[in-house]
Length: 126
Image (cartoon, rainbow, N blue to C red; front, side):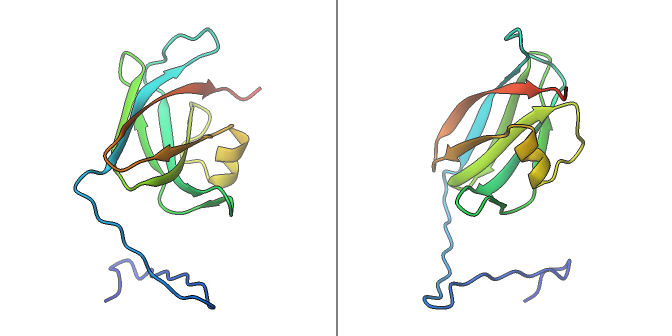
């Protein structure tokens, strides 16, 4: 069936068409802190997470966002294994892939069942 929003995407290698689905009872998670130039943790800053293909330099899905708590900590849960990019800034509301690149987004690898700890520098436009 089709999605309710009318959007369906299928990308197949024409010489070797395959579709792979990965289901897990142990999705990955990412937690950590956002720090400023003085290495102090920053409260209330947006943190952006995008599924990413580093080889094709392409966003693979919806951008997720959260904010750090009063201690500068963030948490993302329920992620499939793979590559993601992360950035944190007050400069943008919903950055596109090019803006994530300009903001120096970090590329990370999420593994099945692993809670990855990651420190993210606060991006400030000059």
